[in-house]
Length: 420
Ligand SMILES: *Cc1c(COP(=O)(O)O)cnc(C)c1O
Picture (cartoon, rainbow, N blue to C red):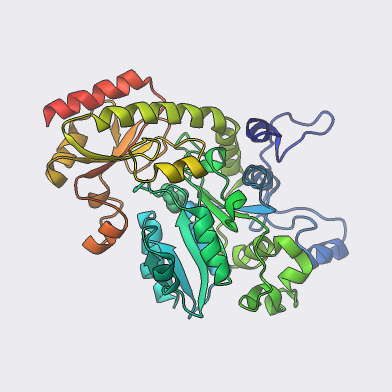
């Protein structure tokens, strides 16, 4: 099946006279005829369902759809994108371990890595896509367990050289985890380029309508966990009656461990109704992404030629620094445009206040056009140095172009420029 078809049909096929639309199975638990049958599921939770903290039919249908879209062997939904990032890391990192991450990532993830994971004893070294291979190699320690980056970074809109970072990660015996939120699998499938694990905030384009926070982890099934660095994946798990995830679940070892071990303990599994809403968004994802691309490109071209704009970061523009990477890895951009307004912080904030149609909101990838000033909001906690590493200028604004008629969006931007 092609993506458009997968978005409508993967994950759920009704049997004879069953509901045409994915049903909401609003039940915490599942009834069994015998105690023996429940015991069997405790031995192997992939057999069936016992409790909706590990799995639920509505959520699992959506997991299968997303795994099919990304080309993975399995997926697990979480209650937020942050929960997906947290569990994706904790599945293979413990106290004393180390992460190599691109600096140009979402501010919330920078915070997770530099503050909360640090308190748990997991440290991070940030690198840049502009660094040489030799410089990136020096960031690794013998405790490095993964490399992390974003396909198209929020909000810097830099493009990750996935093949290059996969090669570097694999040379050090660790997986590459890619946050594919902005690209969506419609525009890029990182596993095809060598990424091992893909994470998403489904709160963005996948949901699309700004109704439901969510996240997902997809296992590519490609990484060799038996290289001696990942005993939690290969050695018996005493908390799961001595199971070895690689021996029992082969290519799906990582995602099975994430569910059986981490989801059990952290309990950040979405409700069935949340997954139902996410599924509605997924059904139209390819159509929406194409229109986002068209609207985004048109607005980016307008901004690029505007005298009050210092610079525009939008990789689909031929003049963009990452345009070659964009052409290699992406079939389209999303409609997030980072641009810098002349006059710094004060002018940027005045511009936001002058907009009428475009909403000031802390979100991105809403179906309605919205705008945000990262330095005073999402990245408020970052030091100047972290802001620079994330590619954020004080006058930078992040515009998320929606699906209104693009002429109306342009008219609102123009009147706000006139005001400032
Ligand atoms: C929004 C976002 C997150 C966090 O997702 P939530 O669903 O808000 O928790 C993580 N990564 C990226 C790239 C994001 O855009």
